[in-house]
Image (cartoon, rainbow, N blue to C red; front, side, top):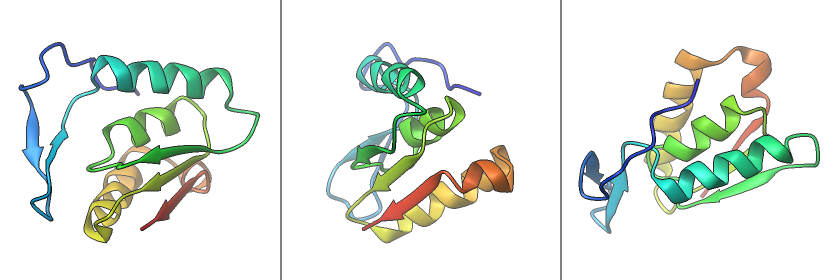
Length: 101
């Protein structure tokens, strides 16, 4: 399950919980390239999503079969990623998700 690629960077974004910036709520072109890379290297080892925010790229990469290490400054973002992932993926798939502050 892959979110649609966002075309305009100012659409569909949300202030981060720590008020340090904006997080995209849709997959942007750079994130889409990251997800495609993840699909190609899914069996090679983990990939790192730095500044994972609300998990748009993290969840798409997980859906592409990658083992994803989601990293963010705010632990509540990582908690939200886990909540969203549990709604989308099986427990077996969730074993490929690691969260780090």
